[in-house]
Length: 280
Length: 116
Image 1 (spheres, one colour):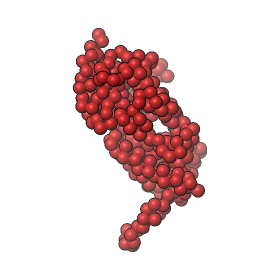
Image 2 (tube, helix red, strand yellow):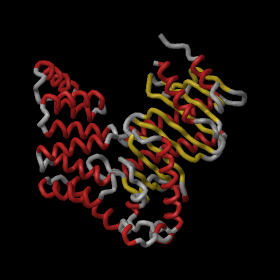
Image 3 (cartoon, chains in turn purple, green):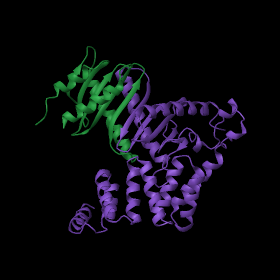
Image 4 (cartoon, helix red, strand yellow):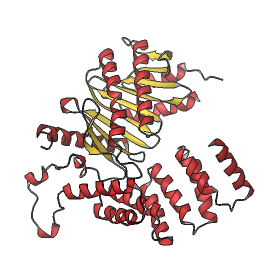
């Protein structure tokens, strides 16, 4: 891989008009060298402004950096240049789902599923459809009917949609895990729209053993929450009823205070849901 | 050349609500430098905070979230904040529950810059 990067870099140095920047930028993106990948992709777009794959590359880098507005802008450009571009359709489907625009997400993913045999797209589409079916319909404000307390308290039937109505900002996601790290509710989709809830839940829940050990020895009482910033996300977790764990993740661009507010809201939702018998 | 660590930890401990600050090796949890208020067990704090930071880093990496930069743990009677990711060093602060964690975070990142 390092040889490829060197070879592509040399080729680009020899011929700045070469399209090899696409492979180089994508490889650097996968290696999480996002700033370098971004610079290379931007230079490529400057030289090839009508190359749809170049804009697609910038969009994918933007998602990794948590910059969803730029991603949407770039994928819109891609679809203007090449209307059926599979990467852009998948990307727009992902963005629309993250922003809660489920009908729009379904439209994009349906389009790409019809032409692309990728099983991950089919899986993402199924997720979007399940979510659409289980969320309550948005009341029509023109009807003037006030929302009742009971309506506001309605909890989703599908555990995967437990936090769906609370997650309205860019790239927010939330999970409820049991004491063993298994997913009880919520969903975690990666940038391809694949459900990676189980993997992420299992990995993150392992931190709590370490926290409990630290709390025992440091004599600072019970833990309320842990928050950490990573290269691409802000993650916040808190213990909930029955030794469960609420995990919230948002893009790195999200202010820490906002993530913690979101954690509180998801924590209250999780407690209510568990008290009512886990949606049964 | 390694910068003097003493002024770094002293500067952090001077922040309001900070009980202890330490520079710790993430790998083995040993204290490299510390500034502790009375009653704090530096070795214990260092070992546990380093272990927690390491676990968070490994878990986040495994979950494809990238490297952990800042960590904050809130508990009934205290807060632990840590930054790391450079040269195996983690800077840890133990603070009162009511301490201004936003300010502590800024100071921790400044301190981390000084370690490089």
